[in-house]
Length: 113
Ligand code: AMP
Ligand code: ZN
Image (cartoon, rainbow, N blue to C red; front, side):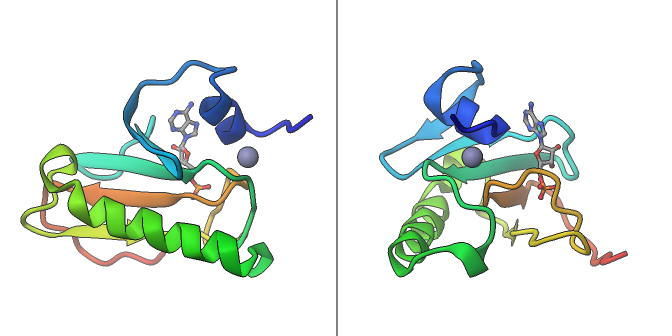
């Protein structure tokens, strides 16, 4: 049994407000927003890192990225947006189920530290 928060969101074991869902991913609002809009696109299949992913899983991530770009009104993307995939400790990854942060709705600076 998978003891992963995001798998529990995907399965419905832990209820979460989904702003979007399809066969590949769910999109939810981040509980600790870092921009006016901060969403998480969570692939339904569990894997921790891009480095761990199969080619098929990477193809699915690609489909998720394409779909995100098409959700312009829902995610308020029309003036630009930022996608972030944290990988490992130095990047501050805290949930070890690959996910894409979607930041939008405001001008953003660049603060890696
Ligand atoms: P990362 O640090 O890249 O692994 O991102 C994990 C993200 O999950 C963080 O931005 C958290 O704020 C977010 N998060 C953790 N728990 C929840 C939750 N219950 N609902 C929504 N977002 C969450
Ligand atoms: Zn998971």
